Image (cartoon, rainbow, N blue to C red):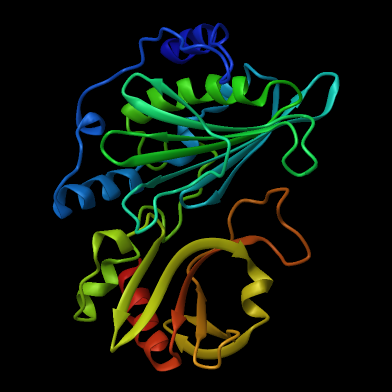
Length: 315
């Protein structure tokens, strides 16, 4: 706790992202500062990123330095969001952050213009949307991607009433230090613990007789080929009724799998709810509470084959 508070105080002197390079003493070295070259090394990075409690990267006590924290929500297994009330500014601050890697076929992009900075040996790219932006959805916002030498990524997006990039930099300094401590799932009281927490969506491949290239491994998604058909497996959180309003497909254990058809006649999405609803949040709506789900999208027969194997692997 003391280290977090000292870092918050130090971050208040950081320059905005458009300014000159700040002298910092961000931690370096170790696993996250070593480039992953082989497939095994890259898979090890993916697994370690998946094991991080994303909400713990920005604890409530650090967010409280910016205002009154009204909500912290574990939006997806790899994503967290916070809303912070600020006196005199009705919109307050909204921050969303997620974890990932740069091993995909297409490296994460942020659009233009981008300003590059360094925090220790972490390469940080900022994209600033000024208050004069014609798009009210992104006005006064700043996006940042922090790329570790290892290939791990931390994405952070902030909307703030004043300099959003300065706020992003303040939060990044805290999150990058927390990252080095590798907070395990359950470190944050705001994180949800479900059947898919920390689970590998590509684990099913071994039971289907197929291998998945590193570029197709995601934190909560997996792209694989089964019986000649490309498929995507997704672990996520979504509104309960958006799942149960689809067509019942088949029963799997004590639960039900639902089917929805894609725009292409040969594409089917199967979705299963894999546990109780998450803690109530402001995101709950007429569509019901958020629930943990497994989704498989591909040819109908292949989707069922993958789904049955994937569900058998979950607790």
